[in-house]
Image 1: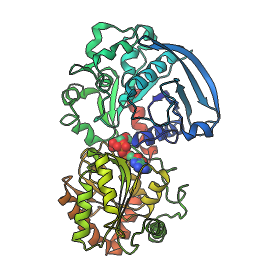
Image 2 (image 1 turned 135 degrees about the vertical axis):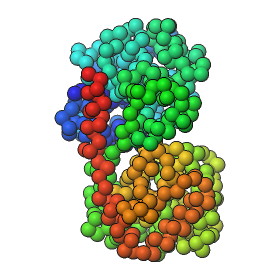
Image 3 (image 1 turned 120 degrees about the horizontal axis):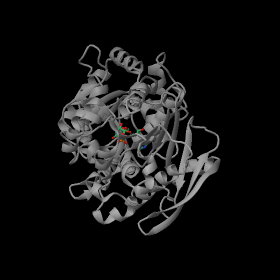
Image 4 (image 1 turned 180 degrees about the vertical axis):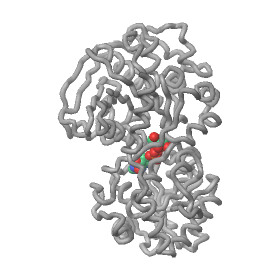
Length: 471
Ligand SMILES: Nc1ncnc2c1ncn2[C@@H]1O[C@H](COP(=O)(O)OP(=O)(O)O[C@H]2O[C@H](CO)[C@@H](O)[C@H](O)[C@H]2O)[C@@H](O)[C@H]1O
């Protein structure tokens, strides 16, 4: 089968979070399973662009409302990612360093989607599936169905994967002029509560909708930032498929970001060497259990309760636990963490920003990973931490409850709690501190979690089944 993934992110080209990881890996494993998989994304000005060779595949012209624009599609020449990678360049809109966060994001991603369908119409052959990811590509199924210029694409099945339903790309109806000549009777397929809602439109118009864990699929019907009724109505075409992880990138025995590699044969020693790097660099006590948090500092990840929870845990344990935080997001949360660095020197440190290398060393060197998320569609951090023998501490929600078993269970290896509250987090940290004293139990849990198979190899067929159901 030929599958075209369309996305705003793809690791290692451009990544802001888990979406990039999934779109970077799934196509690679689809190719290994015998499919033709391609990725199409915007041509941001990232390091990957300048470090690699490209050929021009297509040049076209189309418009965003009255603005006529040229676009260029370039293709990575060496197939180094294991699948065909195409970037769409639109001067003035996509030629930026960051992926998101600009005032004209609505125009940027709408123009990207228009350029994509416009390019597809010029293809001499047709793919079997167009696979869209998140709201940035949510208008594509609508455009393929109801824009007169793209009628030729109508019968190609589309799949929308929702990585995060919190963000929906809402646009005022004044922006409907951006969408190329469309069947005005189909206004309802764009609309949700009197705004153009690209995610809702994708859910309505895609042939199938998937999300990234079973529990999150259920949750969306009761908690999806306003789309609950839509998920209930469309439940027949929705399916949950748990994310995999790229075992080639995330492997403590070969990880290119690590100086000290290890496997299940030398877990404790391997982790200790990585912990030493972190503790020396961040002034933390290597004799104490090390807790980490990696991620966006936003309410969804319950980052706002963490500063207080960590302070409370440090007090309650008499400073017997160390904490290292890596992330960026809401300014007040960043500020609170930064204020803690000095008074809690020796047991707490924070890095505000995005650092891929440091994140790998943290997964390897930490003892525990904190993930108190209020909403977590799947979560990759807990799966990476398991692969690196770091005990995940998660709130029981979404994909976290699908992947982590509490250590109270005979088969358990992690810590689960029910509320994204400082008290639940602190209580769990206390549980962790006491299990940390039991090196046999730690070793057992580490080994168990490192042996769990979360590879894409074991998941890729579930997507194939979805595609096949559409042919
Ligand atoms: N400051 C930083 N520095 C370095 N690396 C950082 C970082 N902040 C985050 N990361 C990395 O970004 C990724 C985060 O992935 P997650 O899946 O946990 O969350 P995210 O909310 O981005 O993804 C959404 O999409 C994914 C994919 O479907 C779902 O698993 C998830 O639940 C959903 O919210 C990990 O690779 C993590 O290491």
